[in-house]
Image (cartoon, rainbow, N blue to C red; front, side, top):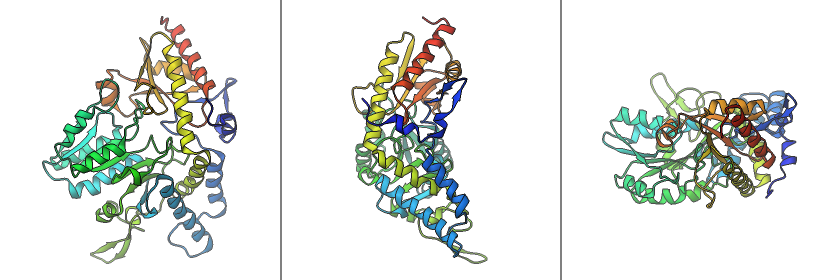
Length: 413
């Protein structure tokens, strides 16, 4: 099944060489954050060691070198996701800030009392809470696309939601709990028929599959660097040029201005009018080697590798009594490398704790998708394994060992 040489890939990740009580680290929590290869770590260290300077200001050589590296990283990001121009790439801290930027800038300007915003029931809090806050401020209405029993979007519910002609549809590309991959290109096409603009939460898609934003056609697309081998504290908001140009800045200060007088000011061009103050320079610089690493592997191969792992994991878990999984089946290519599960009668936090005894790192909780987990799945929490380029079948076998140990300890049949 191997589409990637995982043994060679693991060598690039120093943390994966670590052990605990003689057991190697098995990292199955990449949906929360990915590990970082030497290439990213070295690029950040090299910046601090050899050309640390602020960007867009100094005319001395290391300042110019830092500025060039930072701006070139935006060009790399634009190419990687199929944006037409790096000027459509706004650097923020993370996906959450990217979505909030749209809500606070585009939303405040365009949403009026009585308007509708449409989101789905499978959204991460990052693509839910900003719209709750905005609709409350604006006395607008927040509508939901239902999730069906097959853990996929209910297309009838989507059609009904679009009949209200919402100003915005905010939708996840891939669920961080279910692993469901939504056909955002087709969804965007349907939304545009109703004059609805589209924001896509791509936090769980850009790191794991080929993404072409221009082909998708959405107005906004958000994702994070730390989930795609890059540093923490750097995220991306893609916005169509005409949208960004018409949006007001929401944070004022240095670097986002063109002119300032005592009682007035004018804004810089996009994307810089949204990037006030000193940027996360190391974060931007770290994005380049992260993207290069993924491009060298090939995103199609990355997706195929994770799809094979997901199938293997679901097959193995299906053999274990008292284990319940949550997510679409594996008969179609709409299941990302995430497997959420529970062991009947055992709290997921206890499951994760026993996994840690095996030095197997998984996540347990509501995964910042509380309405989905508690109301739709009917669970207080779920355990989650999530895969990436450095995982293989041996890692899943270790997880299965840990599950059997959980069952033994809690006397689960």
